[in-house]
Image (cartoon, rainbow, N blue to C red; front, top):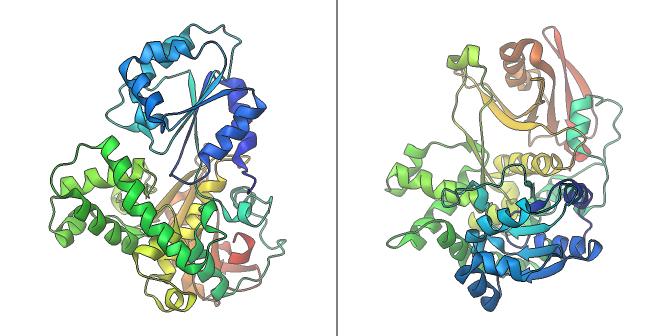
Length: 416
């Protein structure tokens, strides 16, 4: 079992809030973490994947919660019974002011952001995303790349060399814990089962689909895999799939609630909106699933693919997104692209408005023109711009001067 960096954070939240909701994609390790936390805090455990428990919860939500008594409890697969929310709120309201950690809920869909759930338990609940394993968790590293980027001390880093073949292997493997010990054939069977079996079941809990939505979802997922790391244009996607653009947007919203895809907002200054795009970017949550959908099965196929650069960007983005959960300072992850097509793959925005730009390059060499996007972002952000880096496949951290600014080229091995 891989140790999860989010566990310490979850411990803190249980001590500070009456309810903790751990959400994230299926098979990411939520149940394992919940059971571990439940054992530490002497919590009872119930899963709504059990049909008898689910039927009881749906038939009499308030009676079901009362039947649990006063002991703290883990309710796993909570997304199957969102009607329990008013009953849980009533039980939470009845607690003494000092009582914390009464309910630990897990769910593989983000039900509290769904239009079907009208009550969000404000003030009662903390929310924690548990995504597939980060690379730092997979390889037992304690360094947090988000903190490193905010500190800006790049030249002092001592990176481990990472080959293109190793990066391709990381892309193919993805981060789901159960996959890490499987053979190449076993991984493909797992991915197919995951997408065909669990995907549609969760989709139905969030959206009352009509007609042959299975084939629509399959086609949309394949298209989204090819778009990972790129701007998301609903009209273009709808035209390619010959579907209504509103339907496409609705489906993508549901897939985001299911942690299949993540939409990244654009970095836009209110005073200069016309100078930058406001379109979101799309990233699949897991590069292993993306490679599976794209038909990539080997390192050689990945490296020869037109999607290699975009998949690498997704790998870096999702690593930062995961690490942001337990970094010393949480940031907002964005992207930047201006009207002259100059772009920065990842923008980290601090709470005070300061930003760090991160470009991801698949090559092992860096040219001055590679800093064009970072320079444009620096001009656009002005005093809010702190520093910018290009992650590349080299083995040395190097400073580069562009105009009056100094940027850095940093080996991808520092973060991967």
